[in-house]
Image (cartoon, rainbow, N blue to C red):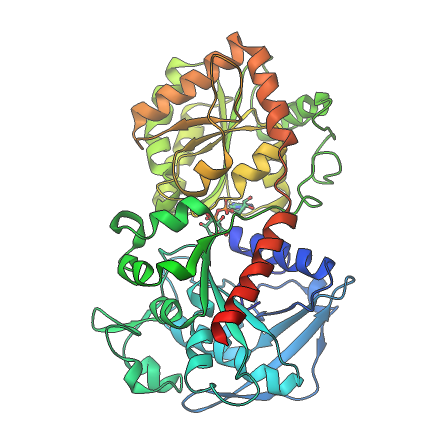
Length: 481
Ligand code: ADP
Ligand code: GLC
């Protein structure tokens, strides 16, 4: 696995959870999984203590000479995690940006990660069958494998590239190629060139043996102009090599019956513990404890993707018309952070807003709320709605990407379903759907209870999807041969 994030060591969103849970599931089935990620400056001391630096640094064959050093951490189940140390590139507090804008040298930093992944095989004297590369940050691995590293130890190693989010592609100017030790003939329309520069993800999409993305619906959506972010033609060209494999969740970490972060435990047979979680959450956040008032929650990166700007616009209207409470945990866009803070000031006791990143608090919101908002503009898979379902917190989602593949729309006639869908990302659609959820909460408790039970009984474990990835590895190896 070549990745920029990996839980629990470094996480900014679902990528870290997805790669980590998949790796652990494969390892459990006996595969020799090894993970390479940058030794980010934010990795905490408690993890550093368990790492062992490999004796010598190794040379990474970019255009010029660069050296990396590996710190190895062998987990209890035998999973090997390699942290790639490079003081100048990775010893930074945040993985991709300084809080305001992306680091200018991101293409160089991740080219270094990719070339190190390739050079590591010789250094470790270990030949992987497949490199599983995640997002643009790992997309140069297939490019190296099919060009300058074509012969030698890795001549029959295949590559699988998974798109977790096509909106991030990695742009650089042409000089990245020579800097990264890649031939200049790659600079053309059907390789890495795009808009007069280099598009790193595009290169990966052309050169990987096979491609996946994280839900079947998103696999279709990105072939069109609306969601393809300019790469739809490449994906149509490689259409036969692209499939969607739905993410799972780590059912040990996200389990309301055992979760150490939450106030009380519960399961799908008896969820009395959920009401204790709800009260505890409200108390700790300064929300009024009012019986039979539904609590709506959000845990998300505050990014345009998530559609929370529209939710912020709709909230005063929703709160004026309906008897509900709202809680948000998130960080990102400064203006949106301020907008939500202002809402908390305007509706004391009814709105709580926590700006920041807090894993424990995320679990407590997922457990303690009745409904969970995800009004995403696009959502490749989404893990938060999967966590919510497992905790009996009914998702209210826009009908897009993985949200469509994982949430079942409420059927008022039968009480079947696991959440509420809406199509248009407008304040009025959000107002209408929140109203429907509120109405059902007060007037259809039998349906709400049936939905909670159905949601909690769903199985989103990684087992099935890990099996599909194993098939994809074979598929990629076949293509390589
Ligand atoms: P994305 O990867 O696009 O952010 P996902 O739904 O796949 O969306 O995954 C988001 C993950 O990040 C979830 O595990 C969620 O709990 C977590 N997360 C997002 N923001 C925060 C935050 N501010 N504090 C704690 N966890 C967060
Ligand atoms: C990305 C996507 C999210 C997905 C996650 C893990 O961050 O935005 O939808 O769940 O990757 O695959």
